[in-house]
Image 1 (tube, rainbow over the protein chains, first blue to last red):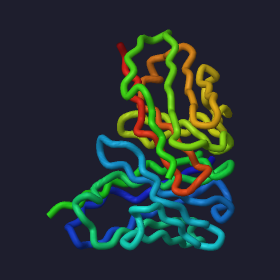
Image 2: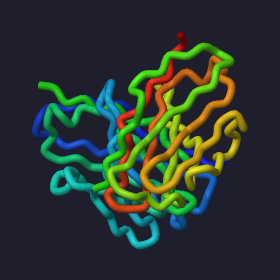
Image 3: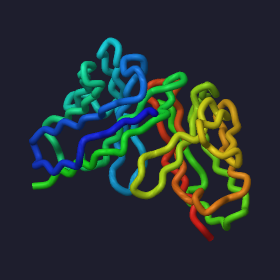
Image 4: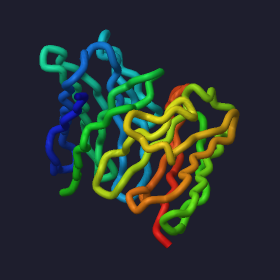
Length: 118
Length: 108
């Protein structure tokens, strides 16, 4: 069965970097995109962008350019989200989600809480 | 960017009642690229409906989606206790993909 398992919660100081992993199983990793979605606690869902797992080409939503990096390690079926120069407002749950029929997000990771605090 | 506005913000109903959730887009959305998600506290979102009206695997048939253009609806025919959650609409036909702000379905 399809599963996306994300890395655990992180506590970081402002200015630091964090790298969240999303390990996929149960399907051919390079056939389907991986999306990233942010959810600030108590708020709604924001689509951050997606990465083409075949080419490695990332696409970022407005507001998620510059400090955000999507990457892959196809040898271990894992996608990564790196956020540089962390700010307090980056505190959120970050979800990875597998693209499916016409790109809909059919399967989601359990989420990774990133807390940025001095 | 397509802005999605959901209404109502909160819907208070009793088990067994019918729920109708609305989502209005700021511009026309291709109905092949419209979805609904359910999210319960402490959990990741779960895909319910894609392509406006197709139920995802394992979704009970009391959930149905409809609509076209700028107006879309999620209907839950007879509410069960497990259905009380937050629901989000989403369009994934144009970049950036966007979500509505959510409708909280609570027990009356």
